[in-house]
Amino acid sequence: MNFVYLATSALKIVALLAYLYALLWVLGRKQLWAKIVGVVAAFGVVQLAMTPIGGLRIFNDFDSGLLYQACTMSMVAMGLNLIYGFNGQFSLGQWGFYGVGAYAAADITYRWVDGDARGLLVAGIGVALGGLMILGVNRFVNRFKGMPVLSQFTLYLLGAILAGWVAVVIGNALNPLLAPLLEEGGPLAGYIPQQIVFFLAVVIAGVFTAELSFLFGLPVLTLGSDYFGIATLGFAIIVYTLMNNSDTILPFPEMKGGRGMIGIPQYTTWFWAFLFLLVVIVVMRNLIYSSTGRAIMAVREDETAAKAMGINVAQNKLLAFVIGSLFAGLGGAIYAHYIGFLSPGAFTFLLGFNPMIIVVFGGLGSMTGTLTASFGWIFFLEGLLRVILSQLGTDAPTWRFVLYPIALLLLMLLKPAGLLGNVEWGFFKKPVFVRVRGAGGVAPAPAGAAGEGGQP
Image 1 (tube, rainbow, N blue to C red):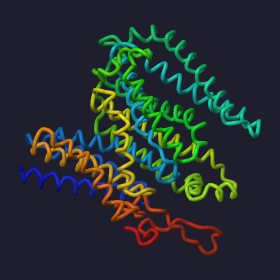
Image 2: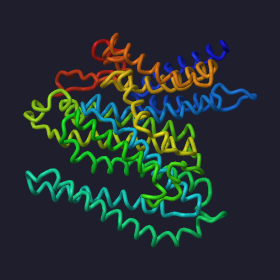
Image 3: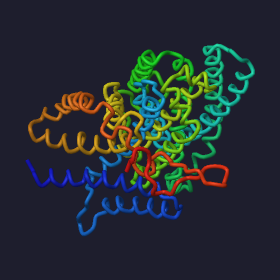
């Protein structure tokens, strides 16, 4: 047993938790310039740790891989916490949406570097038309109060099929015009165009996942929480089955079904992982503390009381489910372009319990707990613990799947609220408003004011 490695790894984990605290503290500053400087510094510190200096790096390739995985897992778990922790909808389909986002983004960039622009064209046009279709059908449905949910779902489904067909026709028609520009040495084959396409692929994958979750959630969210969990588990299994047969049932031979998709461009860098994680953090926090977020949490507390107060329960359930799935799609897209290889085995429903365990570990309804538990899960359980067990024998690493539930059981017995419970750090703390005399309203308290319950 290499005790130097153990000490170094433990020190890195502690440093990462301190880093997360500092990042949230910086984001919670009142001055815009302080936020910008702090975010740039937070990015630079990790980038410096990943850069070789004199032949040495603080974060080696293994550590960098764990860091990317932690960022993607944070996005997935944040989305699940929004669905389950804040909205109270028990979902087991988050891993399925994670896989959908991964494969969608990977197919776009894979085709692009292969000289085929149809992935970007069809997916981009498809999600744009899909969004317009949802808005149009929604306006139509709102004219007829009391329309059954299944009737609404039928209209949305027919609209989605039509939008997809139009996108395929337009994409196939435009592809010959762009194909010559994608050849080696062409204006669209360089580094900058590839990075732009990667960014678009991640965004399109997230939006596509959100639209898919809208179609799935519209009829399913009418079920009770337990039945909804079973339905989402079924969705995850369906996605896994389609992944295994993507080259036969689906028209995507490049995905190679159960053999796995290879040759995915490895575009993910710390810049992209940090950027999208930051976006998820900001959107999540601002949503939770908005009037919409309060409505989402009211549904969790008591649907009957929320409905009596005029809150649209079905709409807020669907909104939380869609945004949570969007986060999962973004995380999947980042993961696919880090690993460079996608196998259906990475998206089984058993692995889908990982984000659920993380949310419970960190604390249901705790954004800080989810973020810190995601990084701790990856670096300790998937990193340090796996390395330790591997030194005890070839089959020893599989024992971590025994240790996970034991640790979860002990946590539920000793601290049911999770590791951090309701404690939030820095940017995630609930804004404190103080009444200003003579102003006729309220104003935010100073940035350094303590949150509820004396939270740090």
